[in-house]
Length: 513
View (cartoon, rainbow, N blue to C red):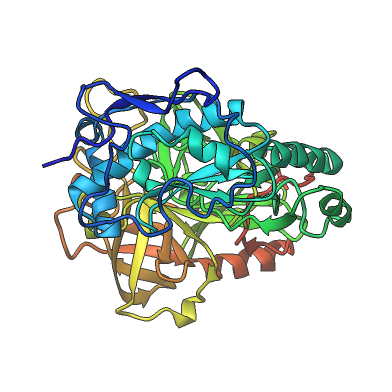
């Protein structure tokens, strides 16, 4: 049964008030000032109670009233079953204990606001120590008055005060000074680490790790201050049909208007980059070069709305072919489209080039790791690809349901766009033959190895199937990335490479180069 720890409104009064002592007024009428004893499976440690490690250095007579309202843990648990389940599983505690921790968490936010307002020179932050027994740890420059102020809060046995040197107000003011010296934003680029009682300058985003101003700014902070490199970040995957967000990645929908007024659907393959720094999108050549594409083709994402511009067929030089074994289109961005699809200038992280791994119901991996983005680390030459390899491909083919406004790529009703995996069966006609399901509209989509993020090829053609994936022996064919790069560079001398970063914003010239 879930315990009912924490149902109380606690009023703590100034000790100098006539006859006043800390008391707990129970909302349910059955809790005392010491309500909230720890469950039997997680007894409080010797230093986990109120005032432990306090090292009080002054009188507590100036403790001000604090009011804290907490709900019964059982009530909180009903509203947060996933949180209780997570804590129970992650820290191997009972459901009762997990519920107690969630109730204490709910109480902590208003308590922090109150302490910061009433004890600006003493209060230095708080955090929940889940690994240490679900203890709410409060930092204070002078622990005694803070300890007395919170002595009657619900679950007081799991509240601990620790002494530190600098108040939260001091740290916040120091962060503002450092941010000002670096010309960046406090709270975003320069933050307070309450557990370490110091200021952190986050490098790798707005602040470069080698910024010459760093040393001086840190030295002038007046409090402990250091730098922390922002870890690499990976953007989350999105539905390939509705993915109008940076960065451009392999596996999302590209719509291409034809001469006859119809629109065809294809899929982005990989990001490419020229020696000049210009970025391109790779897709299949037959998407823009055919008897129904004699005009200057432009590609869009969600052509029927919101019609987001992507690329334009290159004519000077021509960067597209449609024939064996060369079925590729290296697409420059339309004017100003790169601003929409590139990483933000202050995005941080390693800004990896990505392929969208979007789960579908017939991909067993969805039951474990789920949808995500895969970082592209390079490519495997055609000569090195071997039969029997397990590979994955992402496509955006789709036939809309009745009444749905979306371009029909010809996939057939019942096909779900996304990522599927299969095996390489052979290499014929200069292509990689793969036992994997794909449909009209997946053309140009990426083939890659999941474990190491190596690009292999883009979809050219294959078995003529429609609708749901029901044939386990279906085979489709992919034009190798290595073949495309060799061909394009031998014809143009542009130094086109597979991008492992970006797209990034760079100075560029004509949209058709």
